[in-house]
Image (cartoon, rainbow over the protein chains, first blue to last red):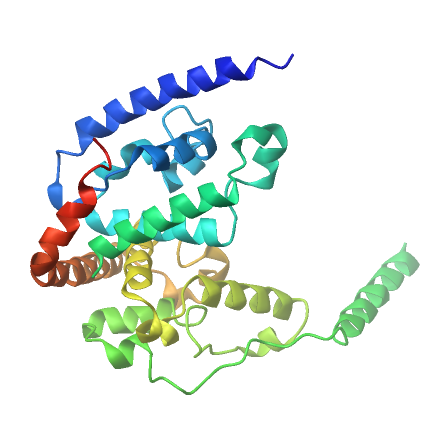
Length: 130
Length: 175
């Protein structure tokens, strides 16, 4: 049943590629209220967040709460708010939820990955809110 | 049949009496308003009144507890709702919150009031005066939105000097 790890990794790279493209399109919209997502941050998002918090996510409620692929379409206040919630979810390790990890153990971020995402979110939030 | 009814009634009364002895305490209020939103920020009077009437019972340290909130099982519900409300947003702590948290709260206030999720039906069913009509809703939403925008605008002027540093950070990130 278990697929070879290499296929999964290859798939992740393909997904990451699309994600990068998506972000490139949207970053131009409003310079004052956008975030840039470095590759190593994006890798964490792809691994641990994107399953639910992007277009393909199954729950509308979850997507309502946060869409990583639409971050740069949010207005500035909402963007700050989203970053704040991201930071809080990481600090409290509320995300990804235990239930999700039980079925998707590969999505569990390492401490280092949590740190990468947290530091990025804090930096972006600070840039927007000075 | 009569006997059964009498028994049920007695049991019910006994239960209500017994549950009064289960230890529970209403969340405490505080008179220290030094960080309260309404004391530390300029909020239009109409909005002030709405916040006080429709929000402050759960979202501040100035909860007014009606008589039934001292009686179980109603008290349990009040305790839970006030605790959760204060944790989510406590206007009495407003000025001690970071700007980021304030912006997040303003964003949530606009969203949640607009979608009519708040004030909660279980609250307004008793506190009829807390129900927001369309005019109230737009007052609150506009206030929250413009306050947030003003806070963010203030930044743009202040950040211009730091522009260079910001640009440096961008290099080698996304590209």
